[in-house]
Image (cartoon, rainbow, N blue to C red):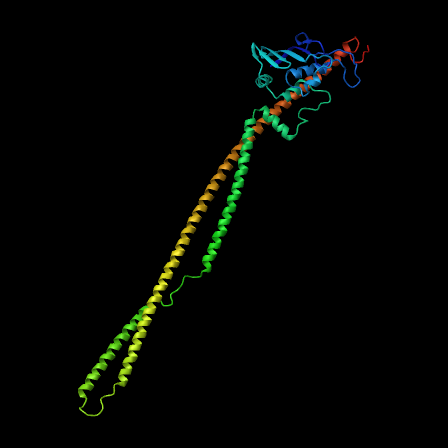
Length: 391
């Protein structure tokens, strides 16, 4: 707990010389008596100046030093405060520099370290502490002047959750990047799928596999017919040879012209021509079959390569999809954890808000009691009123 014992200040407002207020010698209610020399709403008694000096001492003022500096002296302003901090003596002195003396431990020199030490002593955001310490004339409420983002920032600062808030912002940014990556991968996947469909269409456009014009059964039949023709040829040739031998054996010895072999020679030429044609046909058929077999092997090789490429591509796409699903699952898990953490924080803040409202209600009741007490004191008093100068 921080309680003020005395304050000494000079060079601020109308107070040129050093002024000291000993709060230990005063009661719980302090009224500054003075003559109202200002018709603009101020009593001119210096109440606000005292608070401005205290705010300057604790680093709470939002008014520049040049404005606080008294125009009636060239001596720079200086404020010294004596406090009781959890039972330990505390002295804070601020002029051109800030000095903190807590139970003999002095902190000064480095502005950053000294201000951090002062923050530790105050124990709450300075904006809130200034509102609690002093509400200026015409100034709105602390939370009423805040927007939703300011309230969130203030409550986060009160609970010391700045680091957690930064982690949440980092996580949101990472989630946005991952969502962009997911969209990109989905686009790539869709492009690959369209390529697969185009490949399948191209393969389908080739039609059914080629069918041999002459099947194996037809070739066997041709071979059988060929063997039968050869056998018949041999039989005919043997029969002709036998007939020729018989003719030669039975031919009478005559002196006329020999036997006419023209028809037989024509038949032999025809048989030779037919044999040559059959041999050519057999050779052509063998060559055609060889070409068809080579073409079939080539097409089968192409189809096999396409199938292998397609299987490899599908495997890669499946691996990418599995990796994406795992990443999305991980992100969803992190997001659920983050949402649960935020809900817990919201619940804690709601509990703190309820406590604050209860404290505010107690403060309001105390204020009403104080107002009633002041009215009673005014009725009891018989001296001149410090405000209107009447009896």
